[in-house]
Length: 55
Image (tube, rainbow, N blue to C red; front, top):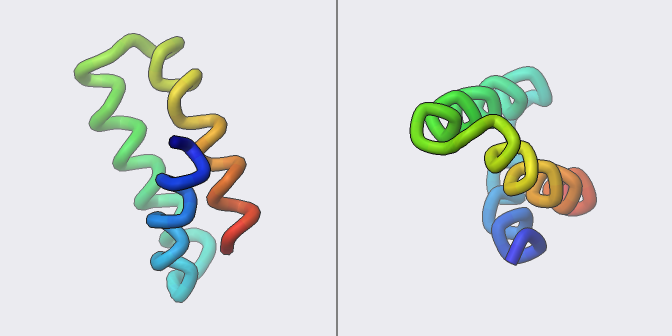
């Protein structure tokens, strides 16, 4: 699942790295409002790792 989400986020590869980082920060900030920090980290780390592979 994380590979699939990473592939879908790869469409953002035209953005500058700092903008992509900002987008990811907003996603994580929104997620932490609904889930715990540990759950967010467990969910987002594999996704970000797969995103790096595709971008």
